[in-house]
Length: 291
Image 1 (cartoon, rainbow, N blue to C red):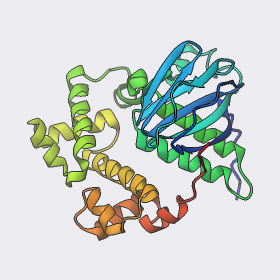
Image 2: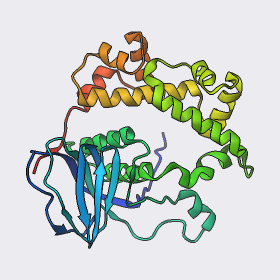
Image 3: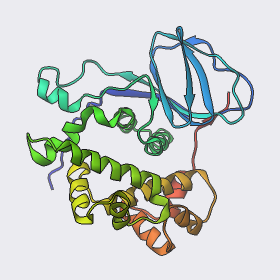
């Protein structure tokens, strides 16, 4: 058999990272570092300043700190504060600068402070990073690729909608704006109501549209069916619960909108390639610091 040789060059180089859990006292150190730092607040609010700009970063929000700039805490850590963090370096010039079309397809714009489009997905990537760094023989390439994905996931989804949706399904023809808006409404409804045990027909009824029509529009915009979107959100929420709570598999299934634990196990295994119990065992190793 002929092997496939891959030469991967991630745009970033991962350094150290972890999960900070507040001890209920102390303050973020006053310092200047030589790397970028990406922060995702898990709970509470982080009060921090970079140079003269002060940030209050709430749960589900991200903050990007820049190298060479002084940052410091501006308030004492409260007991409910916890946040993920990772330091990284940028690797050289951005690829595709000699090809404007390619560059437009691959670039992302990450605000310094914003709400994470998918905080649960980003938290899952932090867990994958910790697992990669804690292996007996850490793979720096895997860690670099995970951090690159973190940054892509942190960018607002609207920045590259044509590259990710309209152009890939209809060539040079963009989707009609009203169809995109309808698909967006369906996507938000799924995100807000998946734990109720939704079906695709429930989404259509809630939006007052024909189920077949909204299903076609949603698939053109997002690349998968409404049923798949519901399952993805349910499984994503299940991953978070399995990592951060000690509830039974049956309790987790109910919290994610599954009435039958057996069906939950089937859907979870289909999306994750392992059972919920195996996932919990794999991702219960945390890299935690409290000072």
